[in-house]
Length: 117
Image (spheres, helix red, strand yellow):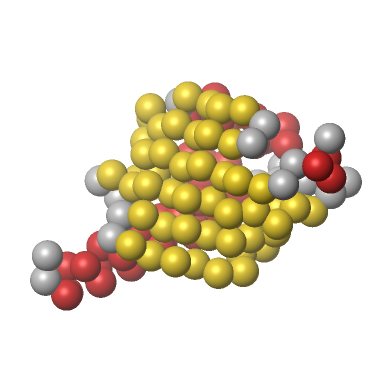
């Protein structure tokens, strides 16, 4: 892959992931949903979700807010370090987002769950 294609791929991946986070933060769940493949998968410390509609329905209930601290790019993979405000607790976490065809196909989030247990 030449340098210009790599930069374009990384730029687009970054925009998709940050649009997704912005949609969650502003409770614009339609914007967040548009960034996801229908059959996306999520793996987290507290559980897993299969399917974009299921994931978004859960997010509508939880209304987490994300404060992005750092973005790392590697082609169609985006890694975010962020604080997640979960209401009573704010947790420092890392999210790894993998994109296919400029939509989030899968992502994993890791954090220390002890403060919320």
